[in-house]
Structures are given as C-alpha cells and as structure tokens.
Amino acid sequence: MNEYNYIIVGSGIAGLYTSLLAREHGTVLILTKGSIDECNTKYAQGGIAAAIGQGDSAELHFRDTMAAGAGLCDPEAVRLLVEEAPDRITDLVNFGVPFDTLNGEVALTREAAHSVPRILHAGGDATGEHIEVTLSRMARLAKVTILEHFLATEIIVEDGVAKGVRALDCSSGSFEEFGSKSVILATGGGGGLFKFTTNPEIATGDGIALAYRAGAEITDMEFFQFHPTALRLPGVTRCLISEAVRGEGGILRNEEGRQFMFDYSPDGDLAPRDIVARGILSEMRKTGSDRVFLDVTHLPSRKISARFPHIYRFCLDHGLNITKSLIPVSPAAHYMMGGVKTNVWGETNIAGLFAAGEAACTGVHGANRLASNSLLEVVVFAKRILERTGKASRPSKRARRRREQDYVSLSDREATGAVPALSLPAFQSLMWDKVGIVRSGEELEKAASILASWQETLKKPSDRPSYELSDMILVGRLMAEAALIREESRGAHFRTDFPEPLPAWQRHIVFRKTD
Ligand code: FAD
Ligand code: SIN
Image (cartoon, rainbow, N blue to C red; front, side, top):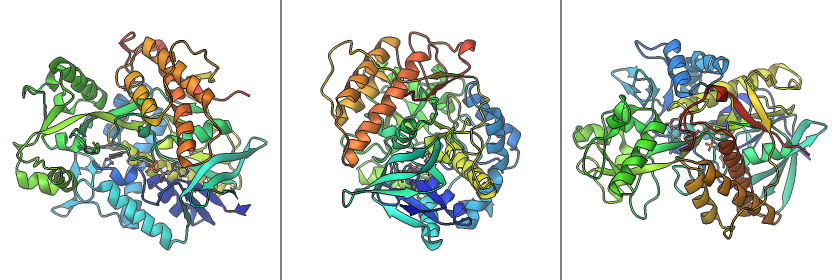
C-alpha cells in the first residue's frame, strides 16, 4: 500500500487549499474522480463573504449567519468562521487569487440576507474559476501528488481508526489502496441527486456515502438549499444566475411582469433564499408557468456586462441579450447544508478521518446557508484541520459533541406501493418531486419506501456510474428519512403538513450506521 502523510479526496477548493497547507507537513496525495477542475468550486459566481468593509464587523456577520441558520447554527463554529475570515482571505490573496478592486480598494457586493455589502469576488462573476485555477496551479508547483480519474470507493477503517482509502482507477478499471494516518474527505455536495440543479455532474454526494458506510456520523441531511434563480432556457444547461444580480438591483417579475417578492417578504428580492425559492414556486403555480423572470434591463448595460461577464456572455451565446430582455429563471438544487459531522477542528467521530468543504457539516450553516459563506467555511475549517494534525502526532480519538441531537440509523423498509424501474433520471425526478423545495409526510414516505426498494435491488457497483448511483441512493435515503423525521418547517426544510417551526425541534438529526 502506498503511504502518504495526508490523503485528500477531492480537488475543489477544499481539497486544493487543504493540500497546500498539508504539504508543509509532509507528503500529500489528492484523489479526484474526474479531471482536476471538475468540481462545484469552478462555478462559484457571487464570491466569498468576509467582514472587511467599512461599517461591517465580525459581530454583524455573526448575526446574519445565525439568523439565516434558523436556530440550528453552532455559535462557536460561526464565531470562528467570521473572526478568522479576514486572515483566510489574506491567505487566498497570497496564493494569488485576484479579487476585484474598485478605486484601489477590494470591491464588495451584496447578496440576500447580508445586512451590508461583504462579498469579495474575482473576474466579476468568475470567482470560483479564479480560485480553482490559482490553487490547482499552486498544488502542482508544491508537488502534491494528484491522481485524476481515481474514484474513492471505501475508507479503510481498522479498530475504529481510519487507515487509508480504496480507490477505482477509472482509466484501467483496477482498484488500488492508499494508506495514511490523516484522510480528508473533500468530495463536495450533492446537487446531482435532483432533476434540476446548478451543480456539475460530479456532485453526487459520494463523501457522505463513503463516510456513512465507514461508520461516521452524518447530520442535517434534511437541509438542502435550492437556489431561486437558475437560467431556464429550453435545451440549455441550468447556468446559475447569481444572487449578486439581485444584489446589484435585479428584480424578479412573474409571467404578468409584476414584481412579486414583496408579497412574500418585506425584504423583497433580497429575502433569504428559501423564501425567494418558495415565492417563485408559488408564482409559477399561480400563473401556470414553469418560470419567472429576472429583470436587469433598467440597469446600465455596461455595468451588467462588466460586473457579470460570464452570465452576460453565456446568455448571449444562447441568443439572450440580458441588457435588453428579461432572463427566464426557476429554482434548482444548489447546496447541501448537511454532511459528515465534524467538530471545529474538522474531525469526525472516526479517528484519523476529517471532512472539509461542502461534504462536511461543521455547524456554521444550520438550517440555511447564508450566501457566499461556503467558500469561506472551506478555508477557515481546512486551516483548522492542519492546525490540529500538524501539531498533534495523532488526531484526538473522539469529536466533541455539544449540539442537541437525536441519533438514528437507516432501517429496513417495506415497499408500500408500486416501485418504478430504477434509472438515474427516475431517481432524480423522485428526489425533485418528493424531497424537493416543498415536502409533505405522505410524499416523503413514498420516496423513502421507493429509495429503500431501489437500494435492495442494486447490484455490486463496478464502475464510476454504478458507484455514483449507489452513493446517490444512500444519500437520497438519508435526506428523505431525515425530512420525514423532522415534523416541522425550518430554514430550507419546508413541509406543508407541518408549516411552522417548533421549539422542540431546535435539535439535529444524526445518522450513524449500526451493524
Ligand atoms: P467541490 O468543489 O465540489 O469539489 C469536490 C471534489 O471532489 C471534486 O473534485 C470531485 O470530483 C471530487 N470527488 C467527489 N467524489 C469523489 C470520489 N468518490 N472520489 C474522488 N473524488 C471525488 N459558494 C460561495 O461561497 N460563493 C459563491 O458564490 C458560490 N456560488 C456557487 C455557484 C454555483 C453554480 C455552485 C454550484 C455553487 C456555488 N457555491 C458558492 C457553493 C460552493 O461553490 C461550493 O460549496 C464549494 O465550492 C464546495 O467546494 P468543495 O471543495 O467542498 O467541493
Ligand atoms: C450566487 O452567486 O448566487 C451563489 C452564491 C452562493 O451560493 O453562495
């Protein structure tokens, strides 16, 4: 078995940034299932939040993050997030990320539910691409070993301690094992579980499935964020239309041309994402349409093309000049708040196993993530993983457990109705229809039962698509079961049969496998 000081699974911002810090402490291997830049990170538009502007403070950022999280954020984790943000931004600048400036100062934009402009961006709306390109170049220069097209299929655990990773070489079809005392999951999110998503194809929740099978605790899976505004043009990929477009003055209008968001929230177009997504869905139903429109035609056209060059160009290439015409949009699956449960040092409950980035649940997002806090979460908590592993010869045995929580495990389910034939589109439609933006106990029951039946019929995976499908079904089950258990509405989790938040539910649902 090839041994490394660190094994990192994934090459988005979490994998790359962690690798650069880890390289100072020893040998580092990155395994990534596609080419290095196939990841959510590359598509990030709005930017990265940090309280560095005039009139802003860590305290204000703390309050906004806590409010968005709807009672389920871990205050200690949020405090670290907002206080360590400026230093981590400096790290990114030192690595070479070219954040935009205005009159010699870092340019800051505003997104929903932030009380002041505090989002740094790069290349206008190409923040993620700049981060990905900069960090991957640095990782290659730092002589991090990077194996592309290697799919992690198992975390090797012996006597409760992570020892390495088993992976499929997708080019040759053979399996290899790699050993390390520190295994870091940086596998990203799971937008690919849903029919409509802003995420690229790699986002299949693999890290959650790998960790669950290895015995790690998985939490907050009922909280999945749907972005209100993905481009809805026939036959065109769901390109995100950044929230920053509304932050710069864009207005949502329904089929009839009426601005409608003030019917749903006093914050109008800049209300929290879950409220805007549900508002759009309700307008679509009222008007019998599959879209609403984002209007930027009243803004100076030079400002639009300069501030959002990627969105402007993408739409123009598909025949839509957004400075002159309304942009058709509808909600799409975007960000997974839940994930592998970690403490504030990125440690899971398995010694030697860490999680970073969207795959992790550090406690900063609670029931709903504040825009542009995810890139920030990655850099703040990745740094902390290295502070812990760099100092201690061995990671501590158990993660701290302070949050109020209920432990559950996935149990067998009887199929209660007809089970449709399993295919990826059938799975994604089921998740979208029954475990999506608006949920009910009845539909969740059906989804959970079908998912359990599908899981039983799965053959042993042998290649990347079959591993991904098997992982997605497991992760879909964790989402559906958690959503079923949480009989209330809170943050991104909305149930028509329990439409209000309940004080008794100010707690977390944690899954762990029982043998
Ligand atoms: P990713 O960047 O998704 O990387 C995951 C990596 O893991 C990939 O390399 C993948 O190939 C690899 N991988 C997965 N499974 C396996 C496996 N089994 N074996 C090997 N490799 C594997 N957040 C913000 O803060 N600000 C924004 O402006 C913003 N805009 C966004 C716009 C879009 C369109 C999207 C989709 C997301 C946006 N987000 C934004 C969210 C943010 O981009 C992500 O949360 C963040 O980039 C996640 O980084 P990551 O490194 O954890 O995961
Ligand atoms: C966006 O630009 O709207 C996405 C920002 C985010 O998801 O944080």
